[in-house]
Structure formats: structure tokens, C-alpha cells
Length: 215
Image (cartoon, rainbow, N blue to C red; front, side, top):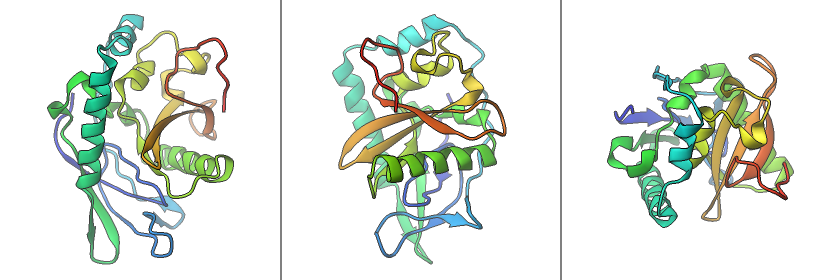
């Protein structure tokens, strides 16, 4: 894992928590964090190695964490620290430091999967997520981060992509957002590099289950 603390952006009415560095202006009218310059988010990714190990057993380890109450507690602690690290600097910009993932159990906080994507791809993925939350779900003021739940990010190493079956890891992106204190996950997909991201699934898992509905 890559445990160094890293500075990250907050942007466009939503917080984009990646392995990134930068800052973005706060929306003075809504109180939401804003942050585009010239139509793009200010994101700089830091190079990280994508785990070489693949196979379903990797995902099974993450999806069989026990007890589940423990990982929920660790996630809550990580997210509280992530929020606490935010600060406002001159010009109404929000600056935040990503918590050190090595301080958290179960692999919570590992966003090394974002190293698969360049700045433009990350900009586009978060824009698609923001549009979906605002326009389709009709939710305003939601905070959006790169997903830090290892039960979800296990999809990258799992041979069974579940609801994202038919897409490879380089064409899947995960977000998590908070709506009035309740956390939810989005799975975005694309047909290939250079194509548009779309939200494929909203839920708390990626493995297919009877009765699952997309969107």
C-alpha cells in the first residue's frame, strides 16, 4: 500500500478524494465545494503501482472481511479523518490531506487503483458522477470521493466483475458519496479509453444478486 499522506482537491460541488494534489474554490452561494478551472477539475495524480496480483481469491478476501461491523467502523473513522483534514485557505479554496491508509485496517483508504487513469480521465469520471447525482438522483450538496471501501475496490482484481461484467478493470471507476450522512457507491464504466464514462450501477456491492437493478 502507499501510505504517505497526500494533499487532495475538493471540486465542483463535490469532494474528489484521490491520490491527488491541489486545491479548488468553494461555492459561495450553496456552501458546496466548487472547483473547476477552464471547465476542468484541478487534479494531479501521483504515480502508484497497480497491484500485479489478480484473481477471484483476492476479491474473496476483501468481500469476506469479518465482522462487517468492524470494517464499517474503520470506514467511518477514515471518512471522519478525511473530512477533518479539510481547511479553507485564501481565496475560498479548500485544501485537504488524505489520511494515511496504513493507519487503517482491512485495506480501507487504498485508492491506488486511480493510478490506472490520467488527469483527463479522472476529470471526466468525476464530472459524470456529479452530473448523475445532481441531475438523475436530484441530490444537491452531496460529497463525492474516490471509493475507499475495499469490498468495492476488490472489483479491480476480481475475475467476476459482477454488475460490471463485460468491462475490464481499466474501464471501471468507483465513487462514493455522502447524502445526509449516508454513504453510497457508484460504478462508472466506459467502452474504452477516450470514450464517455456513464454510471452503470448504484448500490453497496458489485457482485450480482437476484433482483439487482442498474442505475
